Each structure stands twice: as structure tokens, then as C-alpha cells.
Image 1 (tube, rainbow, N blue to C red):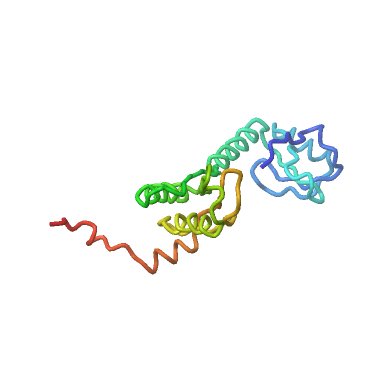
Image 2 (image 1 turned 45 degrees about the vertical axis):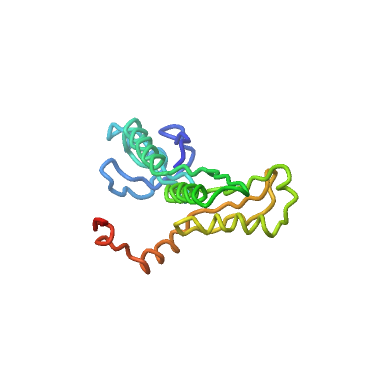
Length: 193
């Protein structure tokens, strides 16, 4: 939706308009002067709602009410738009399996919220001289720990701090995964002895 101000009454330039009446009825194609007269008779404004149509479409209604409804629709549309960020998770060559598991769970939470995740293998000092194949494998091992379906948006590549990859959630793969591996609720609720 556009927040541009629409032309009303004498601002309308088209000489012929397809006019919709105050009660939603189609008044047909009228000249500009006849359409303005019909709006004046109804005690409302003539609003050009579709200027690019041939002939342009105009509606007879109260302009204040029209603007109010349009702004309400725009607010609802903005509320439905979810802002997605790129979150970052960083591991090092010496990061333990438990810590990598915790970071993988956090990455899965971010993916579930709809964010992209940049996984980075941070290298400092002598680690920068290590074999590239080993370092890429280390980052790949971390990515395999992430417990939800994802797709690789940017594959593992050198970054200023080491190696990085960007992943985002894959709803189709997740749906297939959930279908093939249904959660056994009874196993979760059983007390352990």
C-alpha cells in the first residue's frame, strides 16, 4: 500500500472516470463534471482510487473516513511483517562438544524465530595457519549439531575472523522431518527410575 495522497474533487485531472457511488453501486463512466456533481449531491468527496486504470476509477465517499481506513489497513500490514535479523554464533577450534551443543540449540531457536544465523569459526594466532580442510570440517561439524532443518544461504568461506557460513530455516525440509519422525509424547512423560 502506498501512503501517497490521492487526488480528490477538483484535483482530479482525468476528463472521464468510472465512478462507484456512495453505497458501492457502479454509476458507470461519467464525465468529470457529472462525477463531481454526483459527489456534491451525495454530500461526499470524489476520490480517484485507481488513477492508472483506463478510465481512472473514482469513488464517492467521505475522504477522512477513507484515509482512516487506509491507515488502519497499513498498520495491520506492517504488524504482520516480521523483521528478520542475522544472528551470529561464534565457536573456536578448542570449543568443547557440550558448549557447541548449547550454541547449536541457540542457533536452532533463532532459526525457529525466522532469523538467519551466521556461524563463525573464530581463529586467532597460530590457529590461522592450520589446514583449511580441517577448519572447514570443524565448522561443518558444528552445523550438523543444529537440531532443526536449515538450508545454507552462504556456504563455508573465509571471513575476516576465520571461516563463516550463513544458514536460514527450511520450512519444507522441517515439515518432512517432522512427518517422518513424529514426537512420541508418551516417552517424554514417563518418569525415569
